Image (cartoon, rainbow, N blue to C red):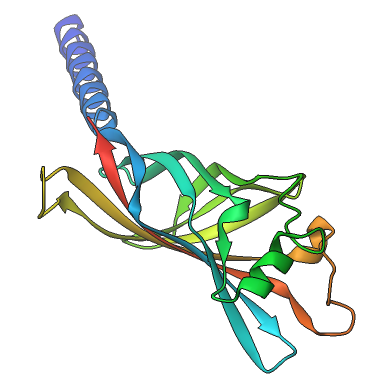
Length: 203
C-alpha cells in the first residue's frame, strides 16, 4: 500500500468516525424528561383477602418523573413518590386500618418512594425497570414490567406532548416487616402493583 492510499484510508476512517459520533449525539439529543400527569395517574394494588378474593386499593397522592429517549428506548431518572396516607380501598374502616401500625404506619412514614436504577428492553414497546422501593422505612429491590403505550400531541387543551405508560410488579410485604394477617392467611403477603399514567414532556 503506497503513501497516498494509506492517507486516503486514514482520512476515510476519520470521516466515518465523525459521522458515527454525530449520529450518536443526534440520537442522544432526543432524550426528554417527563412529569406524571396527576389527573391521569393511577397507582393501585391487589392483596388477597382470606383466600376468597383480592381487595383493590389505590393512592390518590402521586407524583413522579422520568427521562426517556424514543430513539434508543433508554429510560432513566425514574422516581415515583406516593403519599401513604392517601390510600383508599372504598371502605373507611379498612382504610383507617391500612394507615395504622399494622400496615403502612402513616403517622411515622408519610411517603412510599420508588427510584429506578436501570432499565432493559424486552420487546418492541416493553421493558423492565429495576430499582428500589422504600416502604415503612425499609428499602428493598423492586422490578417493574413496563409497556410504552403511546406518545404524541395531546388532543385537548394546549396539545402538549404526552406519553402513556403501563407498569406492573409485585412485592412481599413481610419483606418490609408488615406481617399482619400473614401467618393465619387473613391477608395475603404478596402485593400486586398496578401503575397506569399519562405524563407531560418538559421541553
